[in-house]
Length: 120
Image 1 (tube, rainbow, N blue to C red):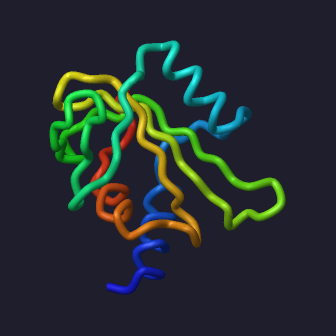
Image 2 (cartoon, rainbow, N blue to C red):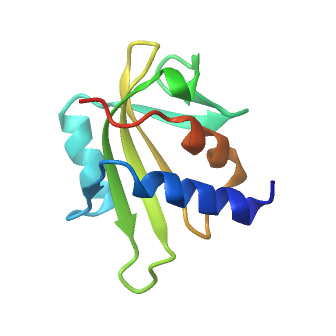
Protein backbone atom coordinates (compact mmCIF):
# COMPACT_ATOMS: atom_id res chain seq x y z
CA UNK A 1 0.00 0.00 0.00
CA UNK A 2 1.37 3.42 -0.90
CA UNK A 3 1.97 6.17 1.64
CA UNK A 4 -0.69 8.42 0.06
CA UNK A 5 -3.26 5.61 0.26
CA UNK A 6 -2.43 5.07 3.96
CA UNK A 7 -2.84 8.78 4.60
CA UNK A 8 -6.25 8.73 2.92
CA UNK A 9 -7.26 5.69 4.99
CA UNK A 10 -6.21 7.45 8.21
CA UNK A 11 -8.13 10.60 7.26
CA UNK A 12 -11.28 8.58 6.47
CA UNK A 13 -10.99 6.67 9.73
CA UNK A 14 -10.58 9.86 11.78
CA UNK A 15 -13.60 11.44 10.13
CA UNK A 16 -15.86 8.81 11.73
CA UNK A 17 -14.53 9.31 15.28
CA UNK A 18 -15.76 11.50 18.07
CA UNK A 19 -13.07 14.18 18.03
CA UNK A 20 -12.74 17.43 19.94
CA UNK A 21 -12.17 20.35 17.56
CA UNK A 22 -9.15 22.26 18.76
CA UNK A 23 -9.96 25.61 20.30
CA UNK A 24 -6.46 25.61 21.74
CA UNK A 25 -2.95 25.13 20.44
CA UNK A 26 -1.21 21.77 20.57
CA UNK A 27 1.00 23.03 23.41
CA UNK A 28 -2.05 24.21 25.37
CA UNK A 29 -3.80 20.87 24.89
CA UNK A 30 -0.71 18.95 26.05
CA UNK A 31 -0.46 21.22 29.10
CA UNK A 32 -4.17 20.76 29.91
CA UNK A 33 -3.89 16.99 29.63
CA UNK A 34 -0.67 16.96 31.67
CA UNK A 35 -2.50 18.83 34.44
CA UNK A 36 -5.19 16.13 34.25
CA UNK A 37 -2.58 13.39 34.83
CA UNK A 38 -1.57 12.50 31.26
CA UNK A 39 2.15 12.90 31.92
CA UNK A 40 3.66 10.08 29.87
CA UNK A 41 4.52 10.56 26.23
CA UNK A 42 3.94 7.67 23.85
CA UNK A 43 5.91 7.39 20.62
CA UNK A 44 5.72 4.96 17.68
CA UNK A 45 8.19 2.15 17.01
CA UNK A 46 7.64 -0.94 14.86
CA UNK A 47 3.84 -0.36 14.65
CA UNK A 48 3.69 -0.27 18.46
CA UNK A 49 3.54 2.57 20.95
CA UNK A 50 6.39 2.92 23.41
CA UNK A 51 5.63 4.48 26.79
CA UNK A 52 8.16 7.17 27.56
CA UNK A 53 7.78 6.58 31.34
CA UNK A 54 8.46 2.85 31.51
CA UNK A 55 9.76 2.12 27.97
CA UNK A 56 7.18 -0.68 27.59
CA UNK A 57 6.01 -1.65 24.12
CA UNK A 58 2.24 -1.17 24.00
CA UNK A 59 -0.06 -2.59 21.35
CA UNK A 60 -2.01 0.45 20.07
CA UNK A 61 -5.21 -1.60 19.86
CA UNK A 62 -4.91 -2.36 23.60
CA UNK A 63 -4.88 1.23 24.86
CA UNK A 64 -7.94 3.18 25.97
CA UNK A 65 -8.42 6.40 24.02
CA UNK A 66 -9.83 8.97 26.45
CA UNK A 67 -9.79 12.01 24.17
CA UNK A 68 -8.81 12.96 20.64
CA UNK A 69 -8.03 16.55 19.70
CA UNK A 70 -7.63 17.45 16.04
CA UNK A 71 -5.61 20.44 14.81
CA UNK A 72 -5.49 22.08 11.40
CA UNK A 73 -3.11 24.82 10.37
CA UNK A 74 -4.77 28.23 10.04
CA UNK A 75 -2.96 29.00 6.81
CA UNK A 76 -2.79 25.47 5.39
CA UNK A 77 -5.60 22.94 5.95
CA UNK A 78 -3.21 20.16 4.89
CA UNK A 79 -1.14 20.95 8.00
CA UNK A 80 -3.00 18.47 10.19
CA UNK A 81 -2.09 17.00 13.57
CA UNK A 82 -3.90 14.90 16.11
CA UNK A 83 -3.38 14.48 19.85
CA UNK A 84 -4.56 11.41 21.73
CA UNK A 85 -5.02 11.20 25.50
CA UNK A 86 -4.32 7.53 26.25
CA UNK A 87 -4.58 5.11 29.13
CA UNK A 88 -1.79 2.69 28.33
CA UNK A 89 -1.89 -1.04 28.93
CA UNK A 90 1.27 -0.44 30.99
CA UNK A 91 -0.81 1.57 33.49
CA UNK A 92 0.42 5.06 32.55
CA UNK A 93 -1.70 7.94 31.33
CA UNK A 94 -0.12 9.88 28.51
CA UNK A 95 -0.35 11.61 25.17
CA UNK A 96 0.52 10.64 21.64
CA UNK A 97 0.63 13.20 18.84
CA UNK A 98 1.07 12.71 15.13
CA UNK A 99 0.68 14.50 11.83
CA UNK A 100 -1.95 12.81 9.71
CA UNK A 101 -2.22 14.96 6.60
CA UNK A 102 0.42 15.28 3.93
CA UNK A 103 3.11 15.34 6.65
CA UNK A 104 2.18 11.94 8.14
CA UNK A 105 5.25 9.85 8.97
CA UNK A 106 5.37 6.19 8.06
CA UNK A 107 6.12 5.30 11.72
CA UNK A 108 2.76 6.75 12.74
CA UNK A 109 0.57 5.18 10.07
CA UNK A 110 0.27 1.67 11.55
CA UNK A 111 -0.31 3.11 15.02
CA UNK A 112 -3.00 5.55 13.84
CA UNK A 113 -4.85 2.80 12.01
CA UNK A 114 -4.73 0.46 15.04
CA UNK A 115 -5.87 2.87 17.76
CA UNK A 116 -9.42 2.16 19.00
CA UNK A 117 -12.23 4.69 19.08
CA UNK A 118 -12.74 7.01 22.04
CA UNK A 119 -13.87 5.19 25.19
CA UNK A 120 -17.08 6.44 26.71
